[in-house]
Image (cartoon, rainbow, N blue to C red; front, side):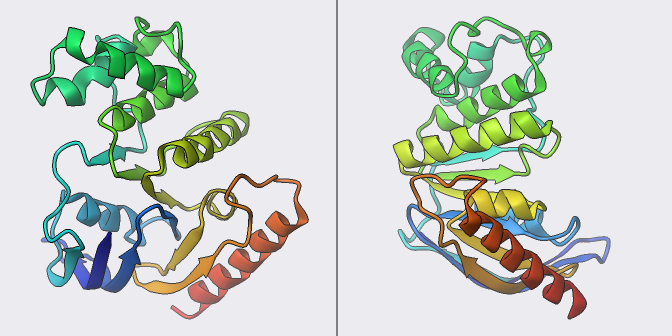
Length: 247
């Protein structure tokens, strides 16, 4: 899908966020960008989304041109919902910006809310929803355009552990059902090991890729009680510790 070659990004303040990042993203991947806060994970995600541009290096899409509107879904750390709008109208927003009327979009918006388990909450406003439910609305909004690529920037970091586990399970189910490509930013080793097929370890600023690890867990869903999951968490923890020591 995408080849990133020696990408670097330095902000006008002089902060070097990324240096020499090379990565290849395949169709159908579930990739986690894992590293400590401030290592450039979100910056890399913004480059992939086309919200920012590298100062050095290149991003080359295999199709020759970047994905068009609706081909990329983006889920931020905060749900970023319109507080005055219903859940259905929040999910409708990306379609509305493309000129699709509420009536024409209703089938897609309701289906997206159903997919994230919010049947019956279509008319609820964000203030009437829990944090986990608000994040579900945000995910539904990202999915309503049926994107090829879903970018997620620590979407579950602020949630309690029980809600986070439930949404992780739901996300894996949706990824398998929809067949899109996911790039997931996290600083949680446990989350990266549970979700991702490919785990990319990044070093502290300037962000570089230290190594990539492939998950041996079954793609049809792993158990947090599986010894193989514990083994993977230990291996990723050891690799991340080595990466931090080397900087």
